[in-house]
Length: 115
Image 1 (cartoon, rainbow, N blue to C red):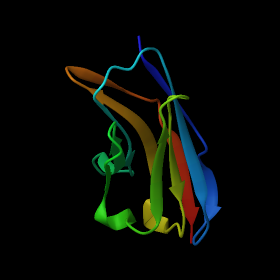
Image 2 (image 1 turned 135 degrees about the horizontal axis):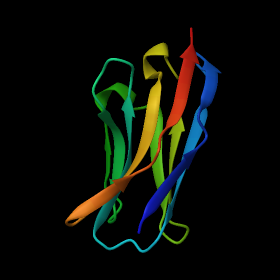
Image 3 (image 1 turned 90 degrees about the horizontal axis):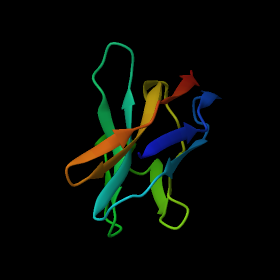
């Protein structure tokens, strides 16, 4: 059973930075994609950034140049460095793992950006 646990959310002022981390427990098959999604109040969950097991990265247009995703395969972690945060980045951020035939979600960590 794969489990994902996020940490690092919180309250930050606009223009500030936060780093989210996600640790995966259990065996992860390859190929796989690990990433971050977010869901703001009243909105659908959306992709923020993800990273394929070969290192390929993908970012939402709204976060390009501000957010950076990174993975440590040995530690089975995926991090999201968020800089120049804006009020519109306020959301619950979810870690996600995709494998062939399935995947898993974390429980979410809340990020609040005050203007």
